[in-house]
Amino acid sequence: DLAQMVADGELDAQYIKVESEHSAMAACIGASATGARTFTATSSQGLALMHEVLFIASGMRLPIVMANANRALSAPINIWNDQQDSMAERDCGWIQLYCETNQEVIDTTIQAFRIAEDKDVMLPVMVNLDGFVLTHTNEPVEIPDEGQVKKYLPDFVPQVTLDPKSPITMGAFADPSFYMEFRREQERAMEGSLGVIKKADEEFEKVFGRSYGGHIEKYNMGNADIVLVTLGSVAGTIKETIDLMDGVGLLRIRTYRPLPKQEILDALKDAKVVGVIEKDVSIGLGEGALYSEIKGLLYSSDLNPKTLGFIVGLGGRDVTFENIKEAVTLAQKAEKEKVKEVTWVGLK
Image (cartoon, rainbow, N blue to C red; front, top):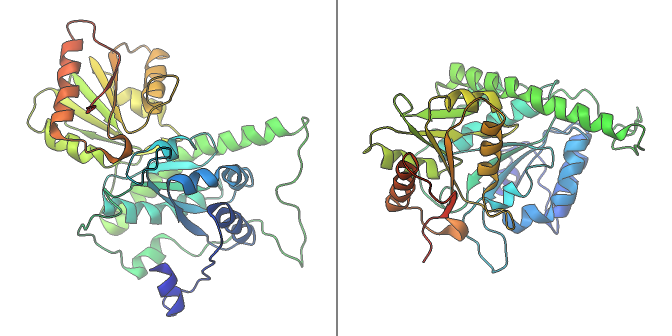
């Protein structure tokens, strides 16, 4: 659709068709370095093929925005949804945002440019949406008015660009005397982006009337002894399930990188059991990446709820009401007795 819009003159942009995702990200790096507002999209093996250059994009502090349709990684060959592709890239220096609905995908993509291009951030943003569950599902959405978008997101004015008339070096060599400082500054920018992400969502609500809570969404948390934690579209299934239950809440993580540590801890302060439901697994560790991080975060705090990890939906397997009920039942059991720390839910 974007290619057709460019061809028809509806979009003032250049559409570049290259031979691989590795080259696609390299082209984005070149375009962004010259000051162009830059966007691409990928998924699964394509994201994995980009791995090398993802670090270059973030290390050069280029505000690229990329949509990633979360899909499983081969082998065995699988084109359906899980989140192992983006989890494998969590340490590459990109801001990572996860969406529950297609409306949120549209709105978050607009917000992503504002976040990435903030002069105190200047980092690429990955907008994650679940493959097939969102990408191949019809859903009513409101397309933001172009005039309102321009009001919210003015033209990008880059601070530093590659220009033959004013030559500079970008992505230069850094020996051990400098490399650590570059990485520390990158980490500071990532940490500082938390405030920018939250403000971007607040300002978006003022213009468009929609907000997604900034970094996290709390659902039915008022009297919840059990809190389920998740990323992405599976939150919808969890909400529908726990609506029929008492004492069970949901914490949906929208901002995964940078991880909003204090907000997560504040949200979980009254929980007796925390159950992390996710569509990925760290092979060899035997648990999901989000579970490892939530568990570590709680361990370093004064909070001491029982923690459980639930691996679901790998390779596109449906996550059903029954699966969520099984997780809740185990969490309820954990309040009274010792249960297995990590459970694969929905196995045959």
